[in-house]
Length: 395
Ligand code: SAH
Image (cartoon, rainbow, N blue to C red; front, side):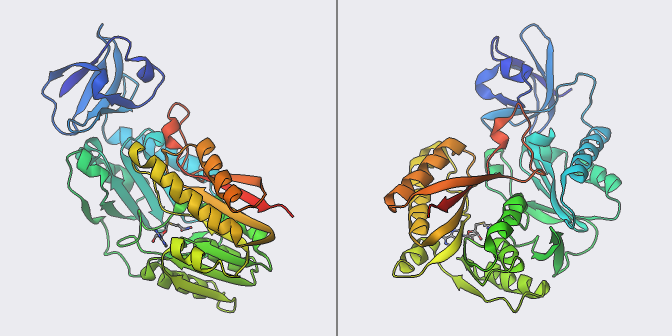
């Protein structure tokens, strides 16, 4: 054992409730000399076992609990067991015709600091913490034993690694060179995914259910898909028989993939336009007379710290106000926030404020969250980050 973290009296409560983080402020004493990512025992002041954690000396969260079970060691069997149980859950909840999914959602799958996505026969890992980094070898070994036919790619090119004292890393960890064309299926639709240069690990798997939901509203309608990335919502709308779709994104490479995704699904006949530009500006340009029946607002994370919350709310309010003004009577707005620091309640309020400023009356007819392969562990409410409202213009 590389060391021990002794928790201040009274500060062990969260750990007893199985919340997996140890904050520096909760630590009374560090025994031994644990290094970056080492596995340490977490004990209360009386020496009672609380958990076994990965040590992150540079982070405010200095311990991330691997296990609350004193009998469980952090080794190959441990990772294999966690991966197998996560896979069983996905097999139970994933919709048919779906070969792209999140296998490991960090803390919510009891593997803090680890994100693992599956894209057909490729596994993409994102190691976010010092502990995950140290365990890279054994994690890959465990993945290979559960998925012997798969290749493994690492996409640990995320800013949060800085807080952990880690550099960004990407590259093949096992298997072949990444193919230029990697295709996944989602609810029976085919999509190109670029796991090397795409956003996140390649695709926004978390919006799968919301994309499926647009099918209910899109038939015969004019759809505006803002922040389209590779066109997911637009593709589903086209497949559902939309009369017209416009995908908007600032990234031309993403729009190029969006176009190819239509061809891949035999939907070239549908009237779909791709516009590269800033959504904030484009929504303003459309104010002089354009109207849509369904508008999707799926912006990137606007809130990355508590300090940016107010500014981010202004951004959300602005786009929701502008979109509400572009809707035909009975029109549908599907509006999302993937900012974990913005609560569901506050998000609703911000959307309400935007719609109010637009002089419109709207009703919530549905709510969406991150898909089930992005679960939220009950004692870890921080796991919920993506929420959506489907609101309809009264009339
Ligand atoms: N709806 C997508 C995911 C959207 S991710 C899906 O279902 O897959 C957010 C997207 O917003 C990214 O593609 C990013 O390029 C784009 N983006 C970020 N800021 C933007 C802006 N101001 N204007 C237009 N696009 C923007």
